[in-house]
Image 1 (tube, rainbow, N blue to C red):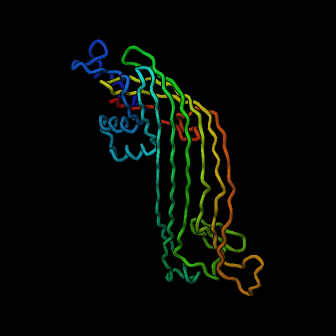
Image 2 (tube, rainbow, N blue to C red):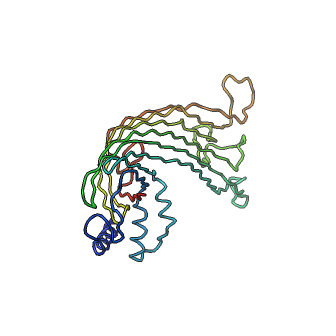
Image 3 (cartoon, rainbow, N blue to C red):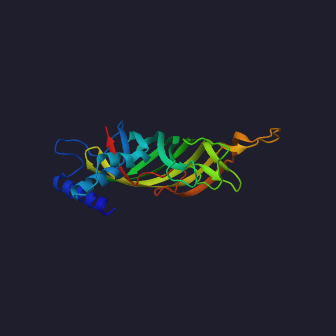
Length: 296
């Protein structure tokens, strides 16, 4: 945070040095948005962190890390009806998947260490999230520092899933006393392990009010901060979990146990919230506190 403050302060000093009287540049370009202008804004915090670390000679600094940190961004677009009124829209569309392998060893003979067999468990996770929003923004101010306020409506839809592929086969001599693989649940008599877990789809609805301030550091380019407050409701449907175990299925007439697979329902949930959203408290995950907006 200290680095970000220092970076913003340096921008202020640089701008003050070259600023001209009035609201136009030396070339006659207007600093403030006008009727018919469009704007595109996003969270500036990752960039500020990057350039702040660059100026301080910080190690481990990379633009790639800045972009990864910005994966939470939602993009905000605006259309100015006039100098004091803008219609704004918000969109975030995210897809993601992760694959992870974990190596393990087990002894064919519990009393020997020379017969260890290596196996690999694989875990895959995936997720999807979309947020759409629209609203209106009103502005005040006659200088390059502009205040604004307004409201917006948001909806979102998301889902996630996990699956496990085990390198060690599930056999009759599986021992409940052995260390259970990832995703498994160890019982008192037998072990069972999860092979797939699907969360129910989540739908969220929100009504958000916001206030903010923008400082036009260059013609039609602003750096600002926004504070939001509102209510949100989310509902998650039933999910599924598939497990496998060595035993008998219900009402089975078999005389010997065998490998079984069973899919179980998991419960849904709902949530209601009335809170600020800048620190990730919102159902929608919050919004960036520092915004960089380009008008054209």
